[in-house]
Length: 323
Image 1 (cartoon, rainbow, N blue to C red):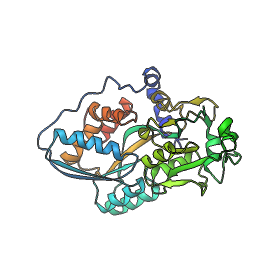
Image 2 (spheres, one colour):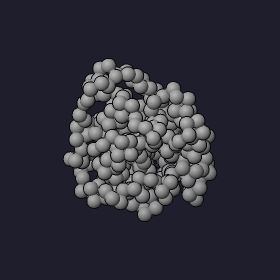
Image 3 (cartoon, one colour):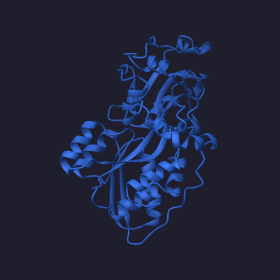
Image 4 (cartoon, rainbow, N blue to C red):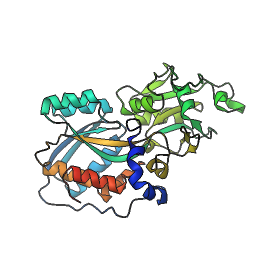
């Protein structure tokens, strides 16, 4: 369970907070970022497309505080982060999935220590349909039956909308599938959790970015696709998903925090930190900004959910960034 859904396993300590917070609420214990002196230089981020817009927003707001800083963002998929980190061509490796063992081993072979994983946001990985689609809910097994040729859940092969309960003009209409390409951490996480590591159907129209998935669903009345909740637009709807308990759960902040929404996840930024030395001021201050109230407010603005405060505090402590 820890591997499938680290969020649920780790949220026991903040469940009460999650239960009492209203949707899209910032924990009042967060404090605004406090600037310091002597911060300048160049940073490059290579990795997740899911995090591309958020990394860009963080970079823009950080540069307002430190105009002497230059930050380049490249978001082509989570699988591009580990090679860039190993080669030293990027200072940050944003990923929408955790690094795999082989990726960590390759990094460790180069540097003699493992990369440092930093949890920076919470995402309710969404299953989107067109805004005009009246579908109320899907079970994870139905999602598997729609997207997977393997159907490890035991679901029947679901090809048309009437097979998931829609009638009228949807009866007999083929379900048009949109998804990410294999370089994407979202592709891998969805495959692991929703498809139980089964294989995607060859009819899934693989897109190079999250926004392309959403645009595809928005332009096709009979489409369905998956993407980070931060890419939601007014032209699509995020469908409630039922997990093993059979209860339909909206992909909102409270359900993500409490582990009720079954495809929630952390979003990460990986950094090369020698455990015997502190981070340089530029990387340290950027990560301090990201994990502050200012940075987590940007997280909310981009459509994702802030890190639970106690977890952000843990990340700051792990990085030696203080309170």
